Amino acid sequence: MSGLRKERRDVARHRGAILDAASHVFAEQGVHVSLDAVVEAAGVGRATLYRHFPDRAALLLALFEREMAAVSRASVDVEPGQALFSMIAQSGRAAREAPALADAWRAVAADHPQLQERQREFVRLFEAPLAAALSEGAVRPDLKISDVLAVIRMVIAASRQEDADEDQTASRVLDLVLKGILRRDQ
Image (tube, rainbow, N blue to C red):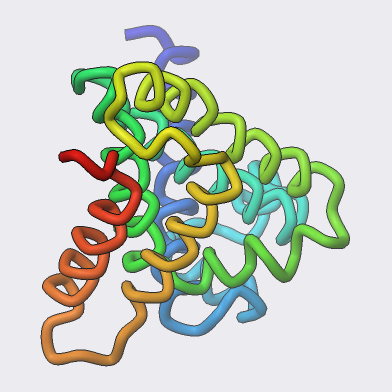
């Protein structure tokens, strides 16, 4: 194996370890925790963190992009009319697994143009699945993208219920909300 290939694997492994650690640390301690906590949790040096992510905003941006990719993947291998529902469910799972990231998404983006652009991209992710669901008659004909975003916010709020079984609570709320956007004759 060439040295370059091994180096690339190490870079990818370090980047992944940093993102995993940041997601965990941010979920436990909030997004304003010292980045030294991320370094420690990732098992890398401070220089490695900053080589990959020059500042907190860059780290958050990478985490947002990773979550957006997961939401986008939720639409793969499902019927076009069902992709919207799958993506909404994935958004709820992501918020349940990393609640601090969802908070940061709203709070930090106001000061960062790149994060604002990612928010717009997130909205655009839902446009084609919404159009497919509308054209297949899978959802109410008056459903708009702003309604889909409101549904996502509701699912995220439900995912934060302090309940003995938050997965069950979030699933129940998701089921109720999604039934609310189905066509009336279904």
